[in-house]
Amino acid sequence: MANDTGNPGPSVDDAALPALRAGDRAATERFVRSHAGWMLRLAQRILKDGDAAQDAVQNAFAAFFGKLSDFEGRAATKTWLHRITVNEALMLMRKDRRQSEVPIDPFLPEFDAFGCRIEEPWTTYVTPETLLQRSQTKEQVTALIAQLPDPYRMVLILRDIEDVSTAEVAELLELSEANVKVRLHRARAALKKSLEPLMRGRDL
Image 1 (cartoon, rainbow, N blue to C red):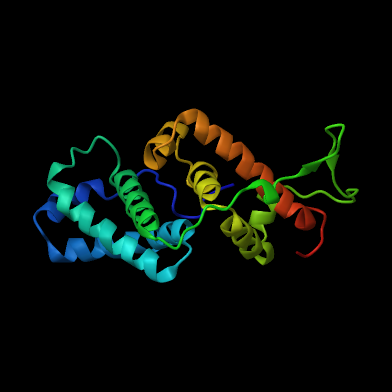
Image 2: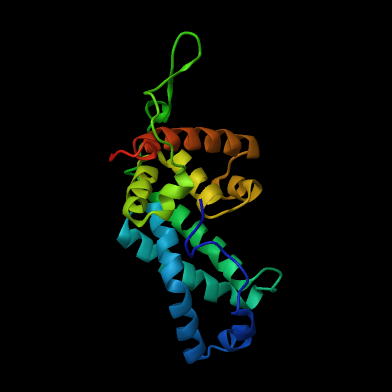
């Protein structure tokens, strides 16, 4: 699954760092405008709440400019800002006491006594990647991802959508790499099961 704009890549902002460090107002406004969009989409994927996502983006910019004097430029500016945004969104999510642990088992495929998967006969097959490229189904796929239990949804978003490494996901979520891999496997299986009506060419 490809990320639309949130995945960090080569940054053109590094040359602007001296102006940003000097507090140049015009440079700061340009920087905020150029990054606010993808940062908000990233935060919304994590938090599933528009107001909370706005807060996460504001906190991320505050953290970025607050730590700018310590930034040594070992990574692209956008890569660093991406990590800050993820961290701020995760902190807000952890503070949300409304969260409840939802088991992933109801989302997973079922198997019979012989270990064979129980499923309807397939007539057509479309891959999840193809579905994401179809504008009419992209929102449905996004909604299905949002329904996954948070511990599994977060791993899926960070690994498969944001293309964050397993080691970094483990660090961000305070998990072992082995645990990240297990959660990712189960999240992918659950998403594939949820996508099967669309993959068979039917509406959800």
